[in-house]
Image 1 (tube, rainbow, N blue to C red):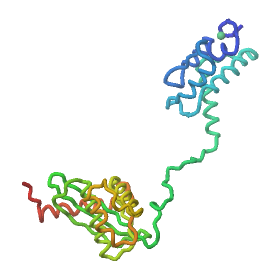
Image 2 (cartoon, rainbow, N blue to C red; image 1 turned 45 degrees about the vertical axis):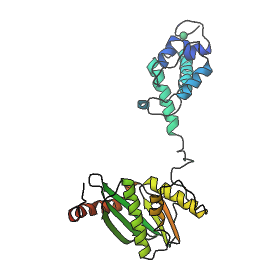
Image 3 (cartoon, helix red, strand yellow; image 1 turned 60 degrees about the vertical axis):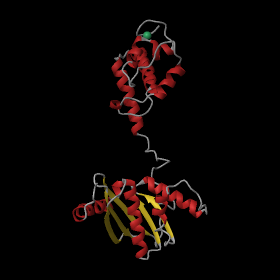
Image 4 (cartoon, rainbow, N blue to C red; image 1 turned 90 degrees about the vertical axis):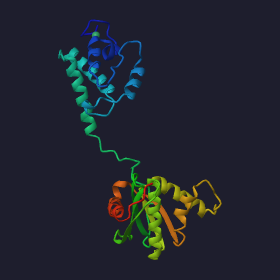
Length: 276
Ligand SMILES: [Zn+2]
Protein backbone atom coordinates (compact mmCIF):
# COMPACT_ATOMS: atom_id res chain seq x y z
CA UNK A 1 0.00 0.00 0.00
CA UNK A 2 1.11 3.60 -0.67
CA UNK A 3 2.80 5.00 2.48
CA UNK A 4 1.34 8.44 1.74
CA UNK A 5 -2.32 7.82 0.85
CA UNK A 6 -2.93 4.14 1.61
CA UNK A 7 -4.03 3.22 -1.93
CA UNK A 8 -2.65 0.31 -3.86
CA UNK A 9 0.91 1.25 -4.75
CA UNK A 10 2.33 0.70 -8.23
CA UNK A 11 4.91 2.68 -10.15
CA UNK A 12 2.56 5.09 -11.97
CA UNK A 13 0.79 5.71 -8.66
CA UNK A 14 4.06 6.79 -7.04
CA UNK A 15 5.05 8.98 -9.97
CA UNK A 16 1.72 10.49 -11.04
CA UNK A 17 -1.57 9.31 -9.55
CA UNK A 18 -0.91 9.60 -5.84
CA UNK A 19 -2.43 12.88 -4.51
CA UNK A 20 1.05 13.72 -3.21
CA UNK A 21 2.59 13.29 -6.70
CA UNK A 22 -0.20 15.38 -8.25
CA UNK A 23 0.55 18.11 -5.72
CA UNK A 24 4.19 18.10 -6.86
CA UNK A 25 3.28 18.27 -10.56
CA UNK A 26 0.84 21.13 -9.90
CA UNK A 27 3.82 23.30 -8.92
CA UNK A 28 5.08 23.44 -12.51
CA UNK A 29 7.41 24.09 -14.19
CA UNK A 30 5.29 24.57 -17.31
CA UNK A 31 2.56 27.05 -18.11
CA UNK A 32 -0.04 24.26 -18.24
CA UNK A 33 0.22 21.54 -15.66
CA UNK A 34 0.87 17.95 -16.56
CA UNK A 35 -2.16 15.65 -16.90
CA UNK A 36 -1.33 13.13 -14.16
CA UNK A 37 -4.55 11.11 -14.59
CA UNK A 38 -4.48 7.41 -15.55
CA UNK A 39 -6.20 8.42 -18.83
CA UNK A 40 -2.82 9.43 -20.27
CA UNK A 41 0.03 6.95 -20.62
CA UNK A 42 3.58 7.51 -19.46
CA UNK A 43 4.49 8.00 -23.10
CA UNK A 44 1.82 10.75 -23.43
CA UNK A 45 3.19 12.50 -20.37
CA UNK A 46 6.77 12.28 -21.59
CA UNK A 47 5.77 13.53 -25.03
CA UNK A 48 3.89 16.46 -23.51
CA UNK A 49 6.88 17.40 -21.34
CA UNK A 50 9.15 17.43 -24.38
CA UNK A 51 6.98 19.98 -26.17
CA UNK A 52 6.85 22.38 -23.21
CA UNK A 53 9.39 25.09 -22.40
CA UNK A 54 9.91 25.71 -18.68
CA UNK A 55 8.68 29.08 -17.43
CA UNK A 56 11.60 31.55 -17.33
CA UNK A 57 11.74 32.15 -13.54
CA UNK A 58 12.81 28.53 -12.98
CA UNK A 59 16.09 29.25 -14.72
CA UNK A 60 16.76 26.08 -16.68
CA UNK A 61 16.17 24.87 -20.22
CA UNK A 62 16.00 21.07 -20.08
CA UNK A 63 13.09 18.70 -19.56
CA UNK A 64 12.09 18.54 -15.89
CA UNK A 65 9.96 15.39 -16.16
CA UNK A 66 12.69 12.77 -15.60
CA UNK A 67 14.11 14.80 -12.72
CA UNK A 68 10.79 15.11 -10.93
CA UNK A 69 10.08 11.40 -11.48
CA UNK A 70 13.49 10.45 -10.15
CA UNK A 71 13.09 12.65 -7.08
CA UNK A 72 9.59 11.29 -6.34
CA UNK A 73 11.03 7.78 -6.57
CA UNK A 74 14.09 8.32 -4.38
CA UNK A 75 12.19 10.33 -1.73
CA UNK A 76 9.50 7.63 -1.62
CA UNK A 77 12.33 5.20 -0.76
CA UNK A 78 13.61 7.53 1.94
CA UNK A 79 10.11 7.59 3.41
CA UNK A 80 9.86 3.82 3.25
CA UNK A 81 13.28 2.88 4.56
CA UNK A 82 14.37 5.89 6.63
CA UNK A 83 10.98 7.31 7.58
CA UNK A 84 12.01 10.73 6.28
CA UNK A 85 9.08 12.92 5.27
CA UNK A 86 9.29 15.63 2.62
CA UNK A 87 6.68 18.15 1.50
CA UNK A 88 5.61 18.49 -2.15
CA UNK A 89 7.45 21.78 -2.46
CA UNK A 90 10.65 20.16 -1.11
CA UNK A 91 10.40 17.39 -3.71
CA UNK A 92 9.87 19.93 -6.46
CA UNK A 93 12.73 22.21 -5.34
CA UNK A 94 15.09 19.29 -4.98
CA UNK A 95 14.29 17.98 -8.48
CA UNK A 96 14.85 21.36 -10.11
CA UNK A 97 17.99 21.94 -8.05
CA UNK A 98 19.45 18.67 -9.36
CA UNK A 99 18.46 19.55 -12.94
CA UNK A 100 20.14 22.96 -12.71
CA UNK A 101 23.25 21.45 -11.16
CA UNK A 102 23.45 18.94 -14.03
CA UNK A 103 22.93 21.66 -16.66
CA UNK A 104 25.63 23.90 -15.19
CA UNK A 105 28.10 20.98 -15.21
CA UNK A 106 27.69 20.41 -18.96
CA UNK A 107 30.40 21.72 -21.30
CA UNK A 108 29.31 24.74 -23.34
CA UNK A 109 27.97 23.47 -26.63
CA UNK A 110 29.59 24.82 -29.76
CA UNK A 111 26.98 26.18 -32.16
CA UNK A 112 27.32 23.97 -35.27
CA UNK A 113 25.76 26.72 -37.42
CA UNK A 114 27.25 30.04 -36.36
CA UNK A 115 25.32 32.99 -37.72
CA UNK A 116 28.41 34.63 -39.16
CA UNK A 117 28.19 35.19 -42.87
CA UNK A 118 29.59 32.44 -45.05
CA UNK A 119 32.85 33.28 -46.73
CA UNK A 120 31.93 33.92 -50.32
CA UNK A 121 32.92 36.26 -53.07
CA UNK A 122 30.40 38.71 -51.64
CA UNK A 123 32.12 39.07 -48.30
CA UNK A 124 35.76 38.77 -49.28
CA UNK A 125 37.23 41.24 -51.70
CA UNK A 126 40.72 41.33 -53.13
CA UNK A 127 43.50 43.86 -52.69
CA UNK A 128 42.88 45.83 -55.89
CA UNK A 129 39.20 46.28 -55.17
CA UNK A 130 37.96 49.68 -54.00
CA UNK A 131 35.12 49.61 -51.50
CA UNK A 132 32.51 52.32 -51.88
CA UNK A 133 29.90 52.95 -49.19
CA UNK A 134 26.92 54.83 -50.56
CA UNK A 135 23.87 56.31 -48.93
CA UNK A 136 21.10 58.81 -49.58
CA UNK A 137 18.91 61.02 -47.48
CA UNK A 138 15.50 61.76 -49.01
CA UNK A 139 13.12 64.57 -48.05
CA UNK A 140 9.58 63.68 -49.12
CA UNK A 141 8.20 67.20 -48.71
CA UNK A 142 10.60 68.82 -51.15
CA UNK A 143 11.38 65.65 -53.14
CA UNK A 144 15.07 66.42 -52.78
CA UNK A 145 17.86 64.05 -51.84
CA UNK A 146 21.36 64.20 -50.40
CA UNK A 147 23.69 61.63 -51.98
CA UNK A 148 26.98 60.44 -50.51
CA UNK A 149 29.78 58.03 -51.31
CA UNK A 150 33.00 57.17 -49.53
CA UNK A 151 35.82 55.20 -51.17
CA UNK A 152 38.15 53.08 -49.06
CA UNK A 153 40.89 50.65 -49.97
CA UNK A 154 41.32 47.04 -48.94
CA UNK A 155 42.87 48.13 -45.61
CA UNK A 156 39.84 50.36 -44.84
CA UNK A 157 41.91 53.50 -45.47
CA UNK A 158 39.70 56.29 -46.77
CA UNK A 159 40.69 57.39 -50.32
CA UNK A 160 38.04 59.87 -51.28
CA UNK A 161 34.58 61.06 -50.29
CA UNK A 162 31.98 63.03 -52.15
CA UNK A 163 28.41 64.20 -51.86
CA UNK A 164 25.83 66.05 -53.90
CA UNK A 165 22.19 66.99 -53.69
CA UNK A 166 19.44 66.68 -56.27
CA UNK A 167 15.91 67.92 -56.69
CA UNK A 168 12.95 66.06 -58.22
CA UNK A 169 13.83 62.67 -56.75
CA UNK A 170 10.69 60.55 -56.72
CA UNK A 171 11.39 58.10 -53.87
CA UNK A 172 13.94 56.96 -51.27
CA UNK A 173 14.81 53.99 -53.48
CA UNK A 174 15.48 56.30 -56.43
CA UNK A 175 17.67 58.43 -54.15
CA UNK A 176 19.73 55.34 -53.21
CA UNK A 177 20.04 54.43 -56.91
CA UNK A 178 21.22 57.96 -57.74
CA UNK A 179 23.83 57.76 -54.96
CA UNK A 180 25.16 54.53 -56.49
CA UNK A 181 25.22 56.14 -59.94
CA UNK A 182 27.13 59.17 -58.65
CA UNK A 183 29.58 56.89 -56.86
CA UNK A 184 30.21 54.86 -60.02
CA UNK A 185 30.78 58.02 -62.10
CA UNK A 186 33.17 59.35 -59.49
CA UNK A 187 34.97 56.02 -59.21
CA UNK A 188 35.40 55.87 -62.99
CA UNK A 189 36.82 59.40 -63.07
CA UNK A 190 39.33 58.37 -60.40
CA UNK A 191 40.37 55.46 -62.65
CA UNK A 192 39.37 52.73 -60.21
CA UNK A 193 39.21 49.41 -62.08
CA UNK A 194 37.61 47.11 -59.53
CA UNK A 195 34.83 48.39 -57.34
CA UNK A 196 32.51 47.03 -54.68
CA UNK A 197 29.42 49.15 -54.03
CA UNK A 198 27.94 48.86 -50.56
CA UNK A 199 24.42 50.10 -50.01
CA UNK A 200 21.92 49.71 -47.20
CA UNK A 201 19.15 49.40 -49.77
CA UNK A 202 18.63 45.65 -49.83
CA UNK A 203 16.20 45.94 -52.74
CA UNK A 204 18.73 47.65 -54.98
CA UNK A 205 21.59 45.35 -54.03
CA UNK A 206 19.50 42.27 -54.80
CA UNK A 207 18.22 43.72 -58.05
CA UNK A 208 21.63 44.94 -59.27
CA UNK A 209 23.41 41.74 -58.31
CA UNK A 210 20.75 39.71 -60.10
CA UNK A 211 20.87 41.83 -63.26
CA UNK A 212 24.62 41.63 -63.19
CA UNK A 213 24.56 37.83 -62.96
CA UNK A 214 22.15 37.74 -65.91
CA UNK A 215 24.40 40.03 -67.94
CA UNK A 216 27.49 38.01 -67.13
CA UNK A 217 25.65 34.92 -68.31
CA UNK A 218 25.06 36.71 -71.60
CA UNK A 219 21.35 37.06 -71.10
CA UNK A 220 21.51 40.63 -72.18
CA UNK A 221 18.07 40.62 -73.69
CA UNK A 222 16.35 39.63 -70.45
CA UNK A 223 13.53 41.94 -69.61
CA UNK A 224 11.47 42.39 -66.48
CA UNK A 225 13.48 45.21 -64.93
CA UNK A 226 12.51 48.84 -65.07
CA UNK A 227 14.70 50.57 -67.67
CA UNK A 228 15.63 53.34 -65.27
CA UNK A 229 17.07 50.97 -62.64
CA UNK A 230 19.06 49.09 -65.25
CA UNK A 231 20.33 52.33 -66.73
CA UNK A 232 21.30 53.69 -63.33
CA UNK A 233 23.16 50.52 -62.47
CA UNK A 234 25.03 49.91 -65.68
CA UNK A 235 25.43 53.03 -67.74
CA UNK A 236 28.07 53.99 -65.19
CA UNK A 237 29.61 50.62 -64.39
CA UNK A 238 30.88 49.66 -67.85
CA UNK A 239 34.24 51.32 -67.29
CA UNK A 240 35.16 48.89 -64.49
CA UNK A 241 36.84 45.55 -64.94
CA UNK A 242 34.79 44.27 -62.03
CA UNK A 243 31.84 45.78 -60.25
CA UNK A 244 29.80 44.13 -57.54
CA UNK A 245 27.09 45.15 -55.14
CA UNK A 246 26.77 44.12 -51.51
CA UNK A 247 24.35 44.97 -48.75
CA UNK A 248 25.55 46.76 -45.62
CA UNK A 249 23.30 47.18 -42.56
CA UNK A 250 22.36 50.80 -41.89
CA UNK A 251 24.06 50.60 -38.49
CA UNK A 252 27.42 49.99 -40.21
CA UNK A 253 26.91 52.67 -42.84
CA UNK A 254 27.04 55.65 -40.45
CA UNK A 255 29.70 57.82 -42.18
CA UNK A 256 27.97 57.72 -45.58
CA UNK A 257 24.60 58.30 -43.92
CA UNK A 258 25.92 61.34 -42.04
CA UNK A 259 27.50 62.75 -45.20
CA UNK A 260 24.26 62.37 -47.19
CA UNK A 261 22.25 64.08 -44.47
CA UNK A 262 24.72 66.92 -44.03
CA UNK A 263 24.73 68.06 -47.67
CA UNK A 264 20.96 68.45 -47.88
CA UNK A 265 20.21 71.55 -45.75
CA UNK A 266 22.77 73.76 -47.53
CA UNK A 267 21.43 72.59 -50.89
CA UNK A 268 17.84 73.43 -49.96
CA UNK A 269 18.88 77.00 -49.08
CA UNK A 270 21.04 77.59 -52.18
CA UNK A 271 18.72 76.02 -54.76
CA UNK A 272 15.29 75.28 -53.33
CA UNK A 273 13.15 73.07 -55.55
CA UNK A 274 10.26 74.84 -57.24
CA UNK A 275 7.14 73.12 -55.99
CA UNK A 276 4.09 73.79 -58.12
ZN1 LIG B 1 -0.44 7.43 -2.73
